[in-house]
Image 1 (spheres, helix red, strand yellow):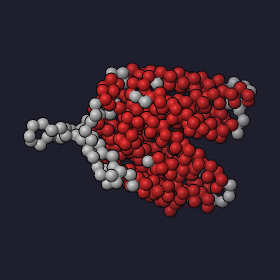
Image 2 (cartoon, one colour):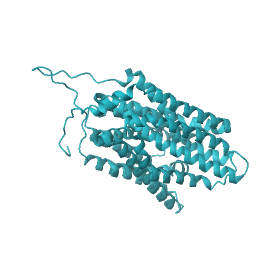
Image 3 (spheres, rainbow, N blue to C red):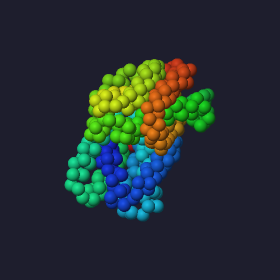
Image 4 (tube, rainbow, N blue to C red):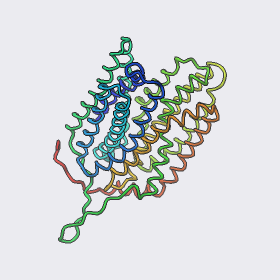
Length: 407
């Protein structure tokens, strides 16, 4: 599965670095139409997360995951075949749907296979994924040096082929079965209990809503920080790509060590307190970077990028552990699918939120720091009563259905 993450992210790095350029110079779309394509992909992803998780509770997980990866491949290949805007919208929606579904299913597979080591697996997975992003981005940068529009098609083709390769690798993985749902009572056949529904679990739905706020770190790094640095500070424009490199380097270097601080459910909950302080510091640093002078702006932007990256890593550890631990075993896929709505919603609405902060100025970033910090404390209180039950569940072994390796 780490090979899947690497191959997938190399392809995504090729496309993410050039997608806007492809739609502009190859498909000849205006800014508004390109923005609409991105928004449609994000909205479609909101549906992909819960549907993918629900399917994984009923069908072989590796087969469902491979199907979502192939859907992404088909969508990417289809983009190559048309310049019709309606078809481009449909392809973008299919790609966004497949992307979010595959993300949830990959997380579910990792949690089932890694078991008690799932937090460390997640950290290693994120490290490999970020390395893949960097490789893909560097490859795209080198290819763009050729200076022809044909190179954009080759980069999109590379992205599509990466999804095919990821699907083929996934199909070689052994199946990870969900825990058995039947309990033997007496001599007769045991009834199958109805699986839990996340849509009737108000506490988990509230937790998911708080997650949508905390996932804003992604939009800050990819949209807010570059826009703010260029439009509202005296920092040199050449600093922006270096801040994104700093983000990737820190994740590769520190994600695995930091994961050790959230190796259990209780420790993951405790991490919400330093996460609160980190988000607050990021908001203050972003606001302070509006100070006059290139040196001050550069220093505060570096501090802001470091703080938001640290928040990203801490939240990734906390989110992975709590989202799995708080989900009942009999409906883990459905619950993780609902949790995936948080990230999918943030991808659709997060850019609007951070651009609003950019437009508001320093007060907007101060409000961002206060909002995310307060959400951390609210989530810390929200999961308080469920953490002891989750810890007890982890201590008691659950019966698992065993699937033959490779089947």
